[in-house]
Length: 148
Image (cartoon, rainbow, N blue to C red; front, side, top):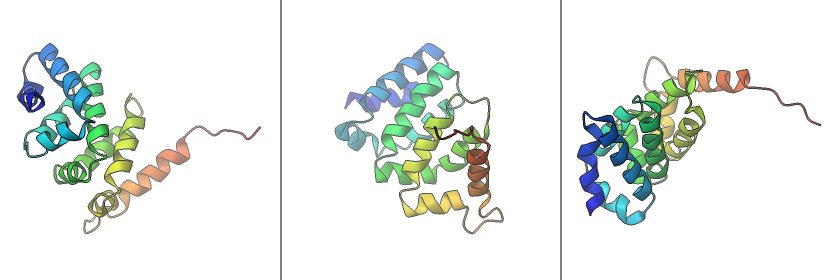
């Protein structure tokens, strides 16, 4: 039950408080019991989303939370509703980001649900398919490995 009490501290003005709250949340986020307690919290996903652009040592903990929570279908839906897919695509497209791989893992989890795939495909928008094009472009730009 105490895990829910961490959520307001994710928006604290002090970096150290945000760091400790995010670290503790990350430690419990994989637990089914903690996920059940956190699911009704309306501030969790928006707060973690903000932390993705915080200093790296805090952002890292937010990414860990999202990775653990995104394997839960209910949380995946909440992430889609909170427009996490465009944020992840921005991170994936940023060559300077230290979190490209984990962003791809989270995106993979989110797109396991129909709405996540539709969000990635941008169905019903003027930009339909742009994210997928960017992903293909990113993979194409990746380092090539020669077969031995």
